[in-house]
Amino acid sequence: MAAVAPAPAPRGSSSKTESYTDTKRRDDVRQANILAARAVADAVRTSLGPKGMDKMIASANGEVIITNDGATILNKMEVLQPAAKMLVDLSRSQDAAAGDGTTTVVVLAGSLLRGSLSLLSAGVHPTAVSDALHRLALRAVDILHGMAIPLELSDRDALIKSAATSLNSKVVSQYSSLLAPLAVDAVLSVVDPAHPDLVDLRDVKIVKKLGGTVDDTELVKGLVFDKKVSHSAGGPTRVENAKIAVIQFQISPPKTDIEQSIVVSDYTQMDRILREERNYILGMVKKIKATGCNVLLIQKSILRDAVTDLSLHYLAKAKILVIKDVERDEIEFVTKTLNCLPIANIEHFREEKLGFANCVEEVSIGDGKIVKITGIKDMGRTTTVLVRGSNQLVLDEAERSLHDALCVVRCLVNKKFLIAGGGAPEIEMSRQLGAWAKELQGMESYCIKEFAEALEVIPYTLAENAGLNPIAIVTELRNRHAQGEINTGINVRKGQITNILEENVVQPLLVSTSAITLATECVRMILKIDDIITVR
Image (cartoon, rainbow, N blue to C red; front, side):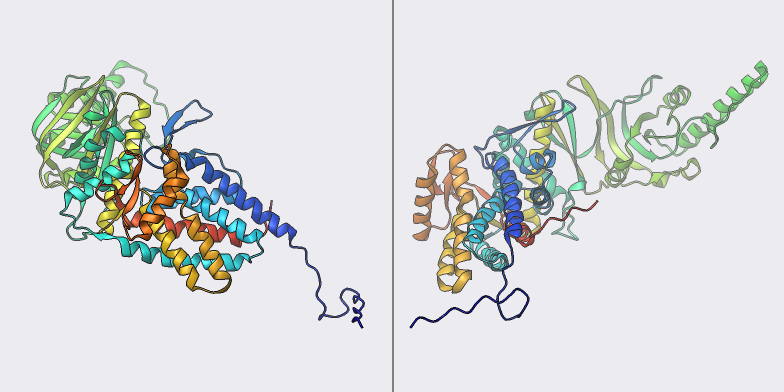
């Protein structure tokens, strides 16, 4: 006899009966978030790798930027969806942490989100997916550490190889043989022996000057100002054995703090005013000359002119070279380099506050002029790179590429380990995590297997962007890694699979580890969101 089903109890009558709760809205919000974030990831996916495409970004005011740096592209994009904004922040934080791999981290996050979506649609709870991702990230970092090769900072060739790998995916890749050693020398010259694993990239100043080609880019031991010397009154343009003062006051007639007008009724009063002005300026110039100072760097002034024609005339007579309008935020770099103190008042102008250099001169470059200060005595640990380019687009892209190369060298100074490039670490992580998933039980095993496959997006995209057959390449890569060749990667130049270490395609360990941890963190955050509440 068939059992009779009990009549459904009226809702709310008993807590024991199951009540239906509608989770459709939560699923929709989650899906909308994942799709929006994936759309952002797909936008930069084509610019991954040495054969990646470049993006032309046109802003409303007519400014055009050509770049394939993930962080730059995403920063300039106007993203409105809140979850998609998280991917923009993700690339920004990768830029801050490692400086390179900004496209990789976004593509990786997009692929992990695709894996999450298929798990969620199969009915896995978001928390289970999120916890599996956390375990996966920890395990992946361990696998990367196992693949890493230790490095000494004295090994200049290895540093140059990793900087060149970073530059190879840029617009200016044909100049990597020049820019890579330049980036390595720049970073090594600012490393402080007292803190050998800390590098502040603010100590490397990049000065851009239009004209010439990227080939003319050079490293300057000293200071470069993208300005002309003020020689309207016929002052000197070259000074040897220079004594340099950095001043933060104005050499011009004083003004009162309030708005006022002086009414002059006759010529004698006018003469008195002019005479007072002359004496005031002359007194200042004599005090400056008395200390033996012969080069003045004057900070840009907001309230009144830093120098007048009269003061320039007196300074020229005193054979003092004047560079005016030094930006306020450059003052710290200038004083650190010259090993001098900024002088805020004429009364404090003393010889011990001056900096010394062999030569200060104005050099003609392209259609403009720059001022070079070389042979600085007791120079601080700073360096200047003068970047040249035939047009503004190339110049800006060269600066961005150089910044990435500097960041790569900085990563290696912070964490002295190298790792193979060319998709090798991702395939190796995927293989080892897939094997680990088989040892686990329950839902976690499914999740980790799904995410292990998601990591293959990097080699897949590299092959796709290079116009190779991605499926054949990734399958062959898996096969080679399964045979124990852990440093096998995609050689995009030859269009085949080779040992990527022998091809000198290397990257810092920090770039890969921070990419995987930041990407998983971001995806976990997006998964945890189940509703968007708008408030006014």
